[in-house]
Length: 74
Image (cartoon, rainbow, N blue to C red; front, top):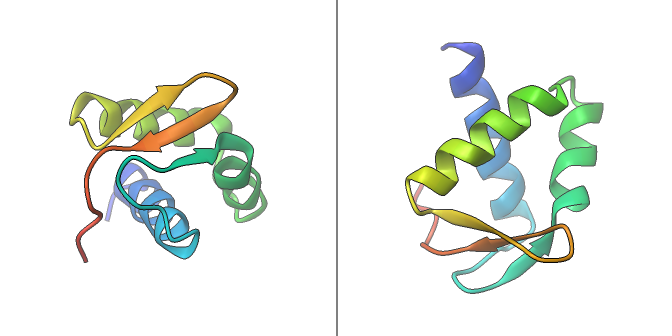
């Protein structure tokens, strides 16, 4: 797996762990901080979140929040 794919898997796993559901917003820090601690850089995480936003899976919301738009499939 590429580093991007590893990061994407970690981001999606984190959202699942947080039990994120469509139309639910989560604090971006609750996603980023644990992933930073796991060795992923801010830039890697931002790249994945931007890709997920382009795919209309998530969207950035006000107040440093992230809104899930679709169900995260296994």
